Length: 382
Figure 1 (cartoon, rainbow, N blue to C red):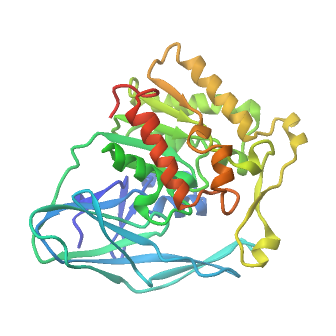
Figure 2 (figure 1 turned 180 degrees about the vertical axis):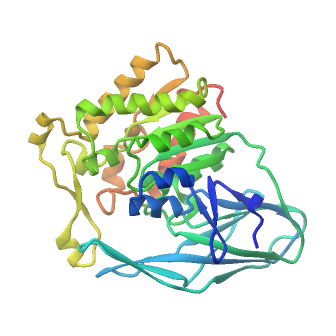
């Protein structure tokens, strides 16, 4: 059995029949919204890693992953496990089998086929005492069964300052190549901070339970990247948007009255810059085995209060400016500074919605430069 003290980046750890299942939302929060997509996102261990000290040169990790198989589409690549030694990437492995969740996006159905645990063999590690980090797949639900080594494994604390981040599937790492390649992980490694990633695919929706979760977690810097899911779910109208943002920020401030808090607007996304949601699967492309998204709203819907990314950026900037009179530790970052129209021309979004691996690297590097290194937005933090 794995010592729970080895697991960093998880908020809740459930004991299953097979092992330990890390979650990125507490059980009470998950119970308040029985949405299948939220349940799946919260169980996918983006930013979760095993961290320990050891002299071992051989390590074995038993896991039980849940793969996703989409009807009519090519098989998804297996999730990746990134092993770091003293901060440097040493090896990447994947578990080739496990449970399988069969998803039919056109029919809106899903079912799970049972599977068996898999063993990852990390061998020929460097000699001597070292810090090991094993980053778990950011988009593959992973039950941890056992961890073995040829020397003692000791839990350690990071000693780093804590960055608590909440965002959408882009923050969770959609289309990134590996768990340490998602943009928040790139930024955290470069800045030398301890990441707690609440990037929840499809669920950056100003949910009160997410704000209360963030309120109760320790943090030296808090960031909230908000907007794209509100547009592509067509969840809110303009009248409800600003009060919901204020309420979300108020709740966080209940637990962190003076912690640097950064509100980030959406990165550039052509289909929703000036066209409201909802965002739907492109069914003709799906029939050809290609995953593409399209904006199904109409620009004329803006008159009825529907939101676009451009409107949301204007609103968020105004909200921060208003609140800064009484909250000098609140800051705003325009998401197009992380990825804008010029970047899109060079690095287009492959499915019209999510960045690729190279763009995750770019966004992470820019966030580190703009926030952690320059101090232009958050001074004296982390």
